[in-house]
Amino acid sequence: AQRVTQPEKLLSVFKGAPVELKCNYSYSGSPELFWYVQYSRQRLQLLLRHISRESIKGFTADLNKGETSFHLKKPFAQEEDSAMYYCALSDPSSASKIIFGSGTRLSIRP
Amino acid sequence: ETGVTQTPRHLVMGMTNKKSLKCEQHLGHNAMYWYKQSAKKPLELMFVYNFKEQTENNSVPSRFSPECPNSSHLFLHLHTLQPEDSALYLCASSQEGLAANTGELFFGEGSRLTVL
Image (tube, rainbow over all chains, first blue to last red; front, side):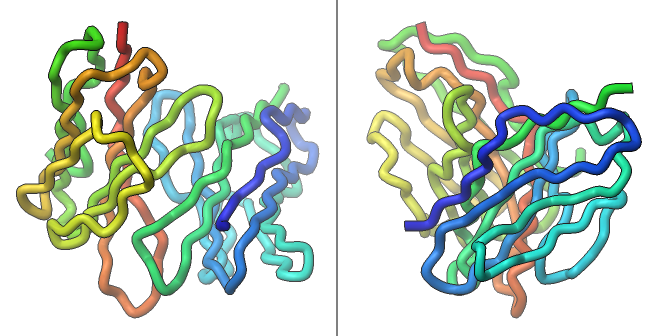
């Protein structure tokens, strides 16, 4: 069965410190992976997607098929990064079904 | 108005009431979704509609009844709910039919439902 696991409910780091939000997935094929973010009082929105190989707001995520992981990283955290982060996957053959993890709340301390 | 709009933003209802949640998208998308977000569980996919046809029902109890009259509107009809159904219900839309799966869902702000 498809599953996305985010083991950390809360991650607190100091401003300027590196950040890594963990995401592991369970899927029999080759899924597409995404990170979504929800800032305070804002709606859930796409942050980045694996297929684009992009860096958004300094964040990157590398797909490791051997470890079935898609961790989100940023070398130097900023206070405005404080938000709820969700890892998600979809089946390329069924673009409609996007499965989310339980989310990690990232808190950046000044 | 642009984006995805959900009404009402807050709803309190008794277990015997019948109410509906409404979602409207102004993005020209042809796929719409209902997700349930509760405090103790991951974001749960409930229903998916593609071109007004339901393509996904994620084992949702029949007390939740979706309706998609056209590609821009999506409803969730609620009847004889239980207190454990209290949650934030999120509507989303996306553009399907593309060669590549962009995976980008556009979410509304949600309807906070409390069942007494």
